[in-house]
Image (cartoon, one colour):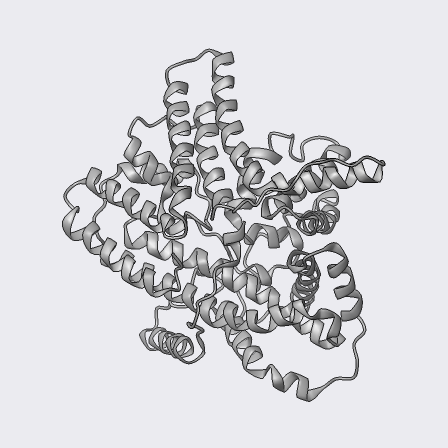
Length: 477
């Protein structure tokens, strides 16, 4: 079920009314409704995969309960590995089986041997990477005694399958989201209004920015061999805003929807394209995944506490694994490695935490230095996104080579895409003005706030794309 679909527009009010007006006197009833609604939401794509998420939920629930009953180190490790192997086993099979098989066949072929094995026609379950990592955070935290295991299966099932963020995040930590299912929830008007604001802003990002950029980005990338250099540059920029509007738009709608039901999810994006270096970019982009890898992979590997070799090794591991998490393709691995190359000089010179505050925090405009830093970071990010978007490494390499051959400035070329460039410009202005908040509607001045509402709503009405609504990019991950 897509957030930008008629189905969801009907589904959400029904669940909201049942939640606050029928089950409002029973916490258990509310949690049961959330779990049931989440399974309906997920099963809307393919009901067959409900068994997969249910099995994962059962495994981690019983592993958690068992961890709470034993202090024996060996038994606890066995239980932890049961959870890890089951969850990553499912993820590995559905997402990476054909990738590894094809690469093994290629390696044997180069060595002069033919490996007789056929690829499988595997359908990737929507959101498997997200809920797998979410439920793993529970098992790991219980194992490390950071979290008490729950014996309430309904609440745990609701946590694992929580529909607002089930298929594309944010990837919530069990320590943050799970305890919220045990606290009585009372509807608060201010929280509901804040949730609707976040949904409106996310919807604008998706149907106006991302979907309009997608029209041209998809056409340019799919026909890059026939495009001029300036067209390819513009195509890369369009994709840069498409993926940001698409993914952060989903996160905003998820966060806003959760607030309608009394839940608080973590912020997943914090205006990453205003970053002054790559380290800052990764503190602001897909925050829930970046911090997950930091806490459950980077730090256990030793983080940056060791010598230079360990810092370099761990940096490449974390970025390459992050790239591989996104998909079974060498383009994602190179995308991750490229970001590691970007990040490494900052880490080795201890400058990776030099830009912690909001850019131009006490000013309306950035300084010349800040503008130059943001421009360079954006440029490097756009190059990396070319690898992320391309089908093969060859496609990405040729795209960058041809894009570097800029011809004479073509005014007609710019005018052809003026509508989308205008929308991106409006988006950047709103982002800049609201960079201290989560959305542009958190304004004390009533007149300015209503003006912001009016502009965004009008842009959604006149420029939003609703015919055959586009799926969100991160559903494939």
